[in-house]
Length: 209
Image (cartoon, rainbow, N blue to C red; front, side, top):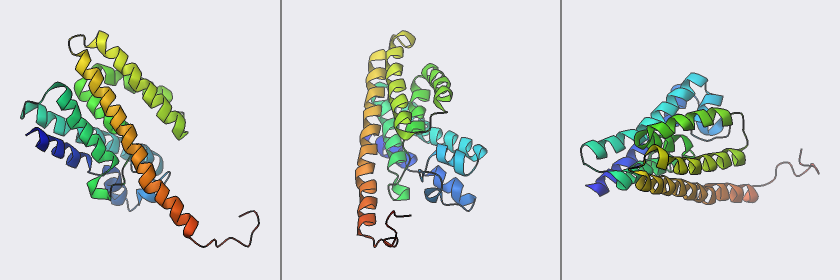
């Protein structure tokens, strides 16, 4: 049953709500903003209300399989976090969108909300402090540092369960980082190769403009 719960998590996570919402508005999210099918890009390119809706749905698609696994299959502690992690993997590499998904930062919040709601509130405050930062590198840097701070805060906030919670959150973070690295290799590398093979229509201009 545990294996089935992992599959369920991945399938729930694979629902590309950003793509669905954008299509409802007659838009292709892959051609808007930074092309990322996530809540932040929907917020910027489609509308703030729609961005919030996608954010909530992306959070729920992680929480729902965790809730099912916890309440009906009696899966707890570290294995339960792995169910949420497979949902985040589904968000990053969605089966229903040709494995082209979001970065997983919002989706991983679903794990934190379900397992450690106190930390989620702290994370929400930190997110709004970080929000003015737009460069992708610094967004990731602040997210990773914030996540590690969470792991240190687990012990005073959840003293009875801090070991498996901390290890679970660290595992989830490492998985998300590895999945995004894999996405970069598979998709960004392929795009660069296609651009290199494509004829240069602007070769007549020495400065490429």
